[in-house]
Length: 419
Image (tube, rainbow, N blue to C red; front, side, top):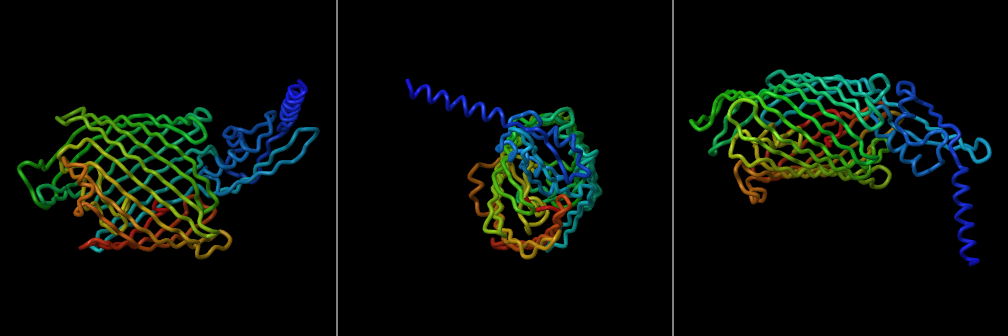
């Protein structure tokens, strides 16, 4: 009986003590462009609530994910009795920035993309901007993304693009080049389930045009195709990354599912999904090991217009601009990043990488993934020029060399880490 009374007394004491440790005031400093009201809306800690160090650390982790924040930290001060003041200190990023991507190969192919984005419009974590792309043809896009537009966990994204490229089409051991145009309007609802999990749901109305330019022809392959389509889209993301300036640690999984149906023309319905897995680990004081694995499949239609492509600028550095297509893909990128020099706002980072990729041919079998003709293995070195106080201000240069027989080589330029 004494033990029971003692246990109940201890529980009562702990509960009373915890309840008496409350947040008197939540203060924010260091922010100039990010609104204090937005920060207080976003975080869990607030005046009058229990003082919880785990939730405070979660708030700091959340703030460091914002494009407008380069770093954040906290302090707790005694106020009176069992009440405490909590101070969040924000180091801001410059968020109104240009972007540029340039890519080329040893075949003298050259393309570039110029963009201008504001990642913290009105101090509310709203992204707005667009880009112009020259990849033989001109393209452009406008993007709006507001994850917290309607509430702390509910937002909206609207994207418009008019993209034209020269696409390589492969059939019967032959190759042809088509001008491809995709004009689309996309609307997505953004929902945060909890700190680590979120979903996106929406639709995309778009028009696809393929027109023959040069290369081989076949009576079985159309030289002109125009079709309007409706796409339903779902995204699920598990996000558990932590940032310390240029260093990243943790795990992230991004899954996308799309169902496409034609609203004009005779085209079968189409399903495609892919999942990107990311794993980052700190190595000592200056090293960072980064990994990305992409696995995806689509409806296995025997068509030269397959959705997955092997391309220099998005999955395998040095391979060339769209060297082949498939209805399935496996891509693995792994690289070791090392800080060579750091002073004040400037960082010079080097990296060594290996990129691996394989794909299932249109109408093919899963064993296509193990066919040596479908496997690409590239390795190379790169440099990163990083500005600490500008969001995503990472100018990258990578040089990739094919390790396969008859492997190509090429340079890839761009803004931001490759992944």
